[in-house]
Length: 464
Length: 95
Image 1 (cartoon, one colour):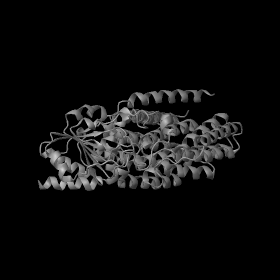
Image 2 (cartoon, each protein chain N blue to C red):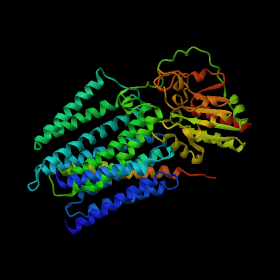
Image 3 (tube, rainbow over the protein chains, first blue to last red):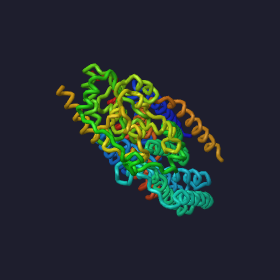
Image 4 (cartoon, rainbow over the protein chains, first blue to last red):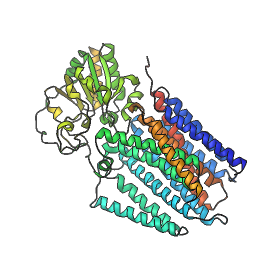
């Protein structure tokens, strides 16, 4: 190893350490921003050191790529709305996976045509693994992005024999991988793997419903890390292996947290095809009478409460109601009401989605409470105000063993004196399960778009 | 299996465990920034992409490499910037 190579490797080690510190600091609100800066610095060092590598003979296309990618990335990051964060992270995961496949195939073609190096068994194995993981990450993320952006139907799309076909396709991929390893010079096997994994990326994500997206995004996040690691094995580059493994682990942790929050196994989420778009047929209670209340009724209860707990859900994001909601909360706080936000881990379309939205609306983060922290507080609250959430407050999760949401930890809003639910209609939530709570005597249904209804409440509050 | 590959495998396994240890206790508040920040780190493939693009290699490698640089840079720059934008919003008390 030359001195230059040793120096490069030492800088890579420094980058890896900075990534670890960065992730560590991202775990606490006080240090998170610093953590992100550590990780940025680590990345900067790794890239700059690489640019000095003796193997690089021409910078033209590197500069072009950096400028094009940098511009797109900057514009995307600066203009994306907080409500669109799930699809943004989904597509970024995809780009990470895509880059890994491209690098692996670039290296394959390099070794294939190189007069000095040969394409060995180890190369064939690592390249195969890298393109398998990277391709499914890229195409799976594209579909997740499409679903979240509304370009692809959000509800599960299931073909006949769906999982059997997927299993068959994956079996063929494994056969192709064995053939590729035995005949590494035949590039058709490698391109065949990419093609089939592209199809699998689409067919494995398309049957997964919108409300299960927090799990899917977390898993794809993990894959994008593992893809980088796999490419690290192709290039025998330690910083890729370490960084990819860290991200792989982080994604797996989040995936697990999301599954636990829904009381479902990963297998059930991936292959269960649970969910309907915007609610299925109205359930058995569809023709029962529900009294409709107005903003004025709501204000009377809210004003006279000592403690109000707001439970936001995906409907808040759809209606972009976070700013007006906090305006309402501030008006109540000014009148001496104790207002807190209760956030379910799977509320929204990605882990932490609601927290980001409310932070955007300037809600101080100590008002944002998670499920375990807040669930006993409903007993002492006069009003639980549910804005655009449904399955996470459905008592069916406690009692009905045949319900798809049975066993899911829910917000105990029914323990509050009054439950106020802002919702567009009586239609069941994503899981397609009717909600008994809508018909409960202590429930006040406020029908309407979350933003319109909260705006009305705010104007009534201002008048009084 | 060569010695280098074996060492690389050791590094990989140890890094996975390091990841689990470092990240386990993340409050739900920070789930989204953690994910987008981690995602930006996975753009480290940029290092490989830069090498593929710039070295003396067949045209196919240069083309694939350039595309990889674009993808990875979007991932890195976009990921870090959007994470910073989100974290900037997380404040304890504005008043």
